[in-house]
Image 1 (cartoon, helix red, strand yellow):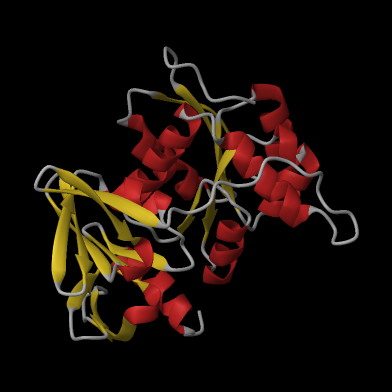
Image 2 (cartoon, helix red, strand yellow):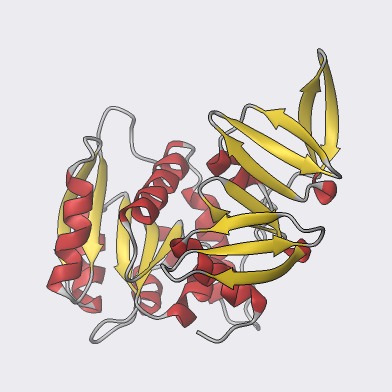
Length: 269
């Protein structure tokens, strides 16, 4: 299934067994002019039927539901027929699984409006780029039994080894392995490398999508860090925090991002 045509809205199905959660997602989508909620489902079997019948472009899919889990819904529909999917879960232990399954994104309840908008933006971008087939290929590889490997397909695009920066009218490659962190400065991003800063005109979301998530983590709307340089995390009283990198640099960690960093540090859910 290719991405939605540019002249029509993104058709969304909401799947959650809790009515209040359905209403919250619908309410957050109501302000988006390019989105149309085509249906809701409160359990796995109903979700499977709705996906087949309505053929939505995007599904917000609860992980744990009566009768069938979100992952079982995918298996029942078939990976190749599954629309772009954003997992929604109240259980942190499922979040990493959802990410590994190459869903468009995942939301851990309770999520804030900013985190929801970020997931929706990512879905729009992937649908526009017709990248859903790549996600299906990764889902198929994970859900296939080890003895039955998925059919060979195009290799997933490699993460970049260099980022081009312009200095004095010249373009210079900066090795991604040397980047310590990236911070936002309006419409620009600053690469911090060995005490120097290199300014590029690229959005933080675009950089986050291009970088290897096993090596880099976005900890705030305005900061991405290289994980092997994280020395410590300081929790704040309001849910936010501060990360200290080797060398002493300190960066804010937003509440919605702190859980992912804590998982990487090895803290239990």
